[in-house]
Amino acid sequence: TKIAVFASGSGSNFQAIQEAIAHGEVNANIELVITDNPGAFVVTRANNFGIPVLELAPKTYENKAAYEAKIIEYLKEKDVEWVVLAGYMRLVGENLLAAYENRIINIHPSLLPSFPGKDAIGQAMAHGVKVTGVTVHYVDAGMDTGTIIAQGAVDVIEGDREGTEARVHTLEHALYTSTLKQLFEQ
Ligand code: GRF
Image (cartoon, rainbow, N blue to C red; front, side, top):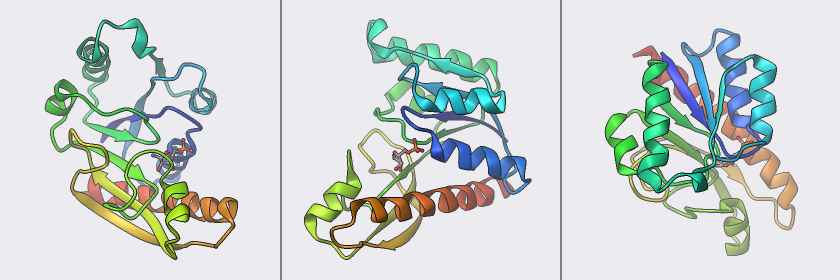
């Protein structure tokens, strides 16, 4: 399965997916990494794997449709079949959703529908929940609102943001790769 990974930041999920592919665990190939944040660390990671990167600055486009038209052009050129969001900090617009209907997925660091949006781990800790987790879901026009595919739970360590965050990220890497494995087996 030909996939593109979209990321805005560090890219640890991208790296976990690429390593799972390299180990033969996930039947896919990352044709392209797309970032809306030129210079993000994900670019360095992709370069290290020799995976092509498209760095786009959304502000240089007239509007979201024009920005996403450029994205769709590259996805089509690479025959990308699935879009995998991994820390992509932007809502997907209608044209891209239509071009990849039910073929765009995302990972979010909470047990949705709790704590959508930014800093989900901080939100969970501020709320005092004892258990949080990770959700893989299909992407729709809303913020972290699409159909849930898989979830896993993580105990919150009270007062230990760093430790909680580390365990959430470790689970993300495992849950995303196992979910992709299942999706691309069918
Ligand atoms: C992850 O927590 C992901 O769930 C969220 O953004 C973070 C991205 O981390 N959407 P990374 O860039 O994959 O390291």
